[in-house]
Image (cartoon, rainbow, N blue to C red; front, side, top):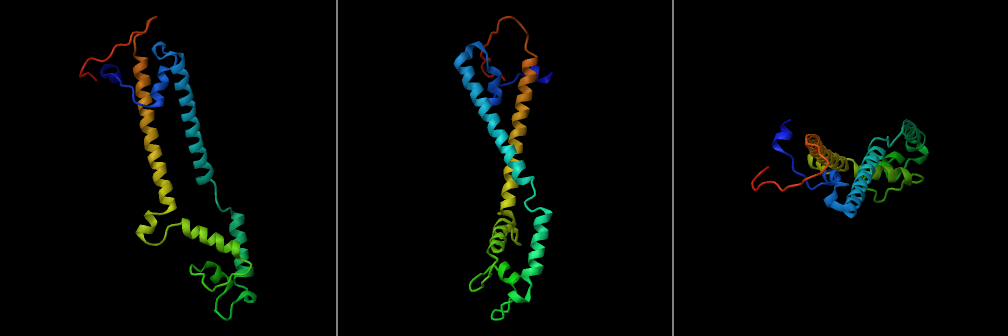
Length: 182
């Protein structure tokens, strides 16, 4: 009831503009434009949600992947056959080395690429490396999107309540708000 007393302004949002679809002063062309923009917005939100769930909610490494890496480490990574007597390093040490100058990781380029990709994406040990990392960026993007979506939903709810309190008649009369009102 408080919304009915204080009124509700249309926000510059496609969600609020969608209430004007079919409104005579907007016209057929305006209604079609608003509908197209509304559908594009819904599609964009669905793509964002789908990407979020497909990328962040799905396990990157399955239990089978972890077992395969453990098997590689046991059977190849620490096998004496692949020990480098010149550099005094096991194959696992050469694959996981961050400074790869001079270290050959025979048969294990895919493992080295995997370690490099994980090292680049995951945060380091310092506070600054943790704050400015891939996972932190994902969390910030999700928080901003969530806050924006919540604010939009609140605006749409207030507009829907305001529309529900409008008096009903066969004709619609739209008047500009009085100067300084609302």
